[in-house]
Length: 429
Image (cartoon, rainbow, N blue to C red; front, side, top):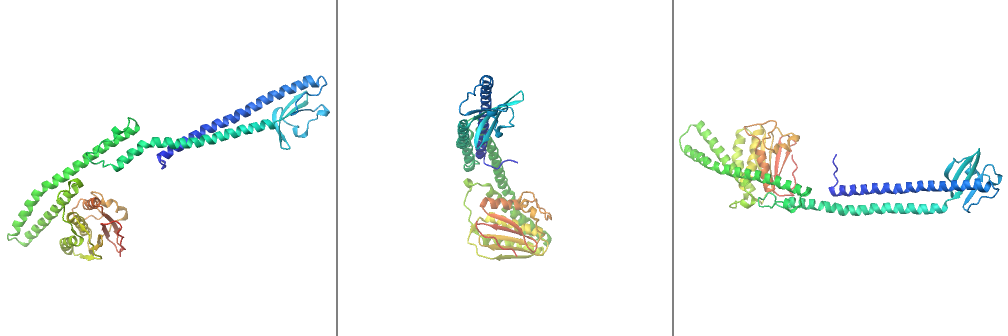
């Protein structure tokens, strides 16, 4: 599992751990060498002194010539009897304590007799402890310095990456005139990352530009045949037609009008802020709701559904009529297709509106995917391709609106569009 710590912290931790490991091994090596040298040198010194005492002093009947810190004991000489605390020690070098004092003890057996040389080590122990304190202090100081140096190194290493992240985050990278990032960095790993960003952003710009041009050009080219269809419908309406043909003519006229509005919607979605064209005259939520209610209310009633347009609170905002009509119309169309009996309600709020129905509902696991292109509900109706809610989501995203989906307690669905951030959600009943 990948670590979730910031990269700079991981660099710092790795640097400190490496320094701690190396410094710790070095410190332990010093301690081990000191102990080895202590045992080897003291053992050799005591061995030589014991040999001189046995072969020179004792053999010639003289007392051992030793300094005040060293004492001689022997199992076969009464006046040099071995004290109890030094009895039973292994041959060779060893250490022992007596009444809180530390001693070096060298034991040697000759013909079944035991000879012991004991030397006080208090002075050496004091120096040894001072050495260990210095080693420990050096170890701790090294770790602290490694931490400080690691912080500086991590900042230096992360500085170009952080700068690149800031440029990618705050610069308008989708602007075709945005300068490339790679020339600002050396030819290293960060430079390669910047070059990869430039390459990917270039492909993204081309893709978005192709999509924008396609949407704009197709929408523009569709206007001419739509005008021909609308003109033909107007001429046919003036002619005497049987009821069935007149009904079909009304369907063609209605479909033509919907396509015209859809083309206008796509044109506005294709425009960026730098190419908005002539300003649009915004209208109120109530006006759009009235227009959409008159259009979809009749179709809903023809299907046998009970349609209501309710106002829970007065909204004072003004909105783009084309985009708001597309959002509200698609939600009402969706309710028409997926509701077989019951009701459809268009409820106006202050800074929001919602469309409720008593249809089959949408499972919770599909609430996120239902806004994706070409995704349709499990009980699909009509001849749609699953693009209506995707278009609604795009329009809401472009305008900073928020659309949510929830299931009604009595069955059915509720789509809620909020125009202003901070508008509280309603309690569904």
